[in-house]
Length: 357
View 1 (cartoon, one colour):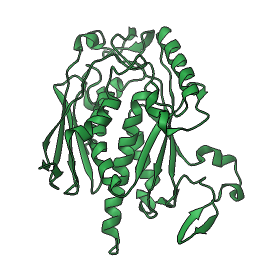
View 2 (cartoon, one colour):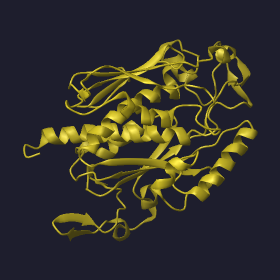
View 3 (cartoon, helix red, strand yellow):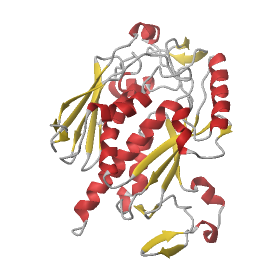
View 4 (cartoon, helix red, strand yellow):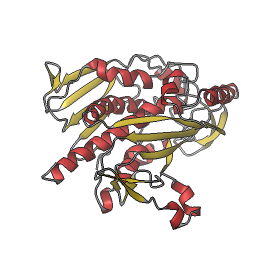
């Protein structure tokens, strides 16, 4: 199996390496007639790109997208949609010192054991740079969801021990960490700055919310919507855990506390609470889908660390280069992209499942 393709009816295949000439994505199953331009895709790419603030890596990439196929006269054709992003600011020389050693916390060792060789320049396919292709594809998926008034929003819920205590969508793009709370955002920036001063990094939690998702999306047993979302979101390299609704808090609750009571709101079935996070039995309830992701600290830090070499000798390593002291601000659009791709795929599957859809 090759792990470069995701989706069932709406499929994406990403390609390219961090220090290669370009990265990109081929999308299959995009419905025809959707208005689409490079400017539509560029908005989310600009939110993910490196070098956008002091709390992100200073690698300078414009991440300009080119539509190679699948669009004619401003609308999708229904055939394969190919998107390309040229790499511009690689510094492969920064990685020459780690050619023969494995970086702690990275996929260097595991890729080497799987393939017998590895691209040590920024990690190749294991690099976070691959996610730019996902964000480009996710922008197209968002256009599919827009037609059904489905909206995907993600934000930084916490960095280190600092958490947002309120949620205001209007301020997410008004601060460097993309938090929904300006006061908490200022403290999160301080935590990130302190980690950088110590040649270290810090992790956090990303929260995602989907508004307007209809009931009925997802499939029973193995293709539950929770399972599909988990697969997509856990495939993001720095994500180490996921929970829906009350998540792990449910383990300390009683059934009478956790069950969401149904009631009729006019001609629509609703729940009085949303402890399930908008998904029951792996199928959407029609309520908001809510999830949280644990994001690990950036493994590339400028401290001396113990490791081993390719020839299996103990040694030390000090990583050079330009790296994010906290991944959270730039992972937000990636989380939105994988969520949108999963939901758009589930939406197309649902249309094929019911003859009355």
